[in-house]
Image 1 (cartoon, chains in turn brown, red):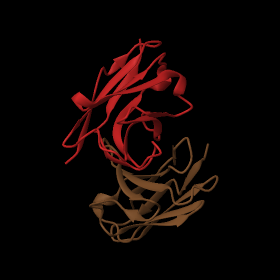
Image 2 (image 1 turned 60 degrees about the horizontal axis):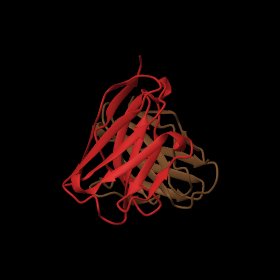
Image 3 (image 1 turned 90 degrees about the vertical axis):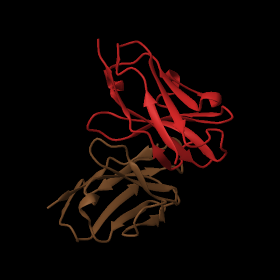
Length: 107
Length: 122
């Protein structure tokens, strides 16, 4: 089973700042990596798939990069609605697995 | 706009079977290139993929749960269902249904249902 390790666990930032979230896989998943945003009491929402493709309707301040074992989700300028928990998900190998999440909180 | 909605009992006794249904509206459940998936999230914890089903009936199950899980599809009702037997307190979670992209059975998930909390307790 591929383990996804997200860092940091919590990111404390102010609106307007840049957020950089990391997801590291225990073995290569090629570009089969997705990112989700989850707000309290809500289901996750797909942001990025294929490591760098934005899902329909996702603002362009969200971008993904990486391949193999190291991936990054960048939020260029944080908006108030971006404070949430973010999960990565690998679908390159069975079983699919998720990272433990990074919480982006208001500083 | 495709929407998914979970339904089923919110409380299940230990050793019994958890049964949930996901109703799909605004689109066809028989569309190729998508699987229909179940994912769960214990309170305050991360996400776990349970399994998924293609419109043809082909299934993918997480090996960690495979011995206890059955996912089925009713295309006439645009519903798919989850059965998890021999439940314990460790199966207490919010259960989500979602559409999975691609042909592997476990691709990117969009959209999701709102989720339903199932508590295992006597």
